[in-house]
Image 1 (cartoon, rainbow, N blue to C red):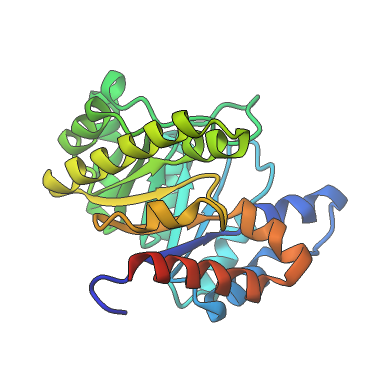
Image 2 (tube, helix red, strand yellow):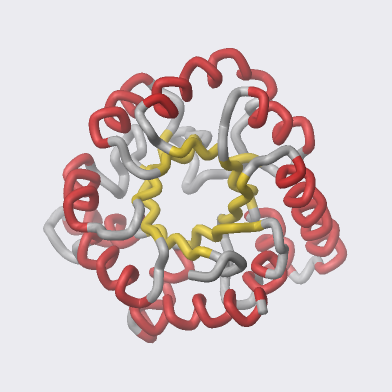
Length: 248
């Protein structure tokens, strides 16, 4: 990988969602992770939720054993998740907000209001060798708070940008894109590594991939859906191609 190349993290949560709908063993998210790796993914993302609605503890065990690319372990800032992360010591942990009633992660973490608690929460994770990422909105206050608490990475929430695009509200989409662009540059100026993700598709990935400060995109739901029609390997390869073309 060249210094300028953008990394692709493939989130395999919703392979587990399909599996859990029947309560059996198929489709296997670990097999999906290996296929994504072979297709060009630079890492695998998995979110172990409090209610275990998709990824399970056994999936995390299996991923840690099977992968040769890094695992990005998404988790809420709870004692239970901290203990699991410290037991496995994945390459990276991404702290995300989590509510039981939400369908998916609805927004960025409120870091500024919980700065002291989060600083103490992530310290043992950093000491264990995990790269700590904070999933936040493109908001200067939240970026500054993430920097103060000792996070090494921020992941900017691209969900609103993607939603506005899908709705055809291009004026709002472009405002959101401008905020993402500005805050990517600002976070980079503070020494933070910048990632982005949530809701990205073939139609929306290129403008985000073109930001020179962004080092990694994490994409899941769309790729798993696209895999139904074209297969997971071609779906990942096409996203990789679009990202590389935008970066070039």
